Image (cartoon, rainbow, N blue to C red; front, top):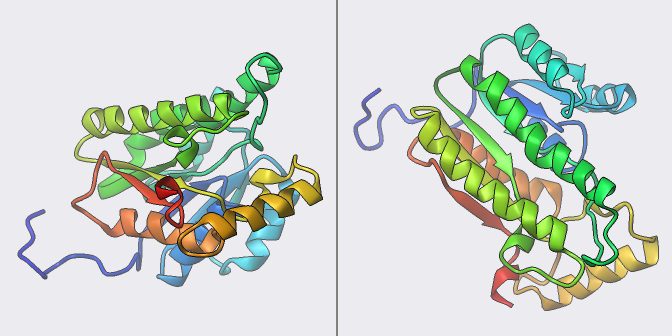
Length: 249
């Protein structure tokens, strides 16, 4: 569709349908809530029924929720067959971070980490991209540790590099469907639930002290990037950092 400057460009997601895998908590739920506020019909999916039920209580009455194990290829295929057509696919699903040195890494746990975050995203695109309507998009999730790795983040850094490369390749493969990825920094979510509470609070406090913005992120901060990429018809193959300036310090 041809646009003249300032004409015909969407200013919100009114009347569109947005599927968010991982949309029942943290950043995914914030994306679903933001899309719903802009008038979108949202479909959220995650592994646990109780998480789906809790999310639906926070979303408008026309929202849909499904239980989905993103690592089960047949379940992912069936999910998209049931969902039908939609405008945007957002993938934020993932296990909590694997924070171990290479020598101390539990390879089984590291593989599960990659299975959900990388291969789950791949399966979602494989089975969902054909249902994206004209003008629609896919938005994936990575993280800034791929650009600024720290000790103990080898598995996470490997994942993040893979997600950025996958996004660029998919943007070429799936054109004209747009494919982008959001790269959050330290955000106050369930991602850090494996850390003991004292360590988690120390992480938030020390990160806030070092960041140019003076605080860690909240899910709603990062959700704005996903909403922009869904609306922004001239962005594809892009990596959008939302990290409070973390890669600068």
